[in-house]
Length: 86
Image (cartoon, rainbow, N blue to C red; front, top):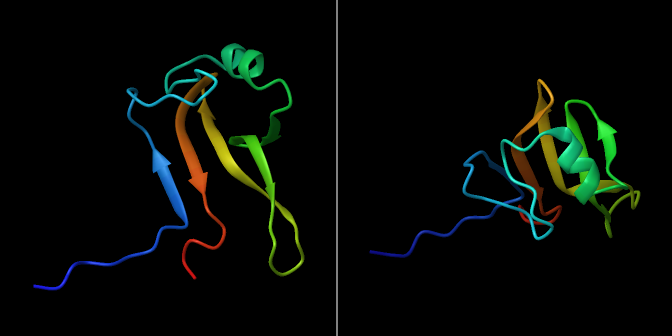
């Protein structure tokens, strides 16, 4: 049987066992997000934590890592790899 092959350009992480390199976890309050990522940019309902510049197209910025917030808490992380589906 051949091995399955696939590509990933976006992953949503919701489990509270995950944490960022800076120690932010799903379930943490927004005040902890701001303490760990003082340059985070709001893009409701997300906070852009790590900003990347695309080497393709118009070279626009995108969130390599973002946190989704609801009711003042982190409920998920999104990891984006812009060329992951190519």
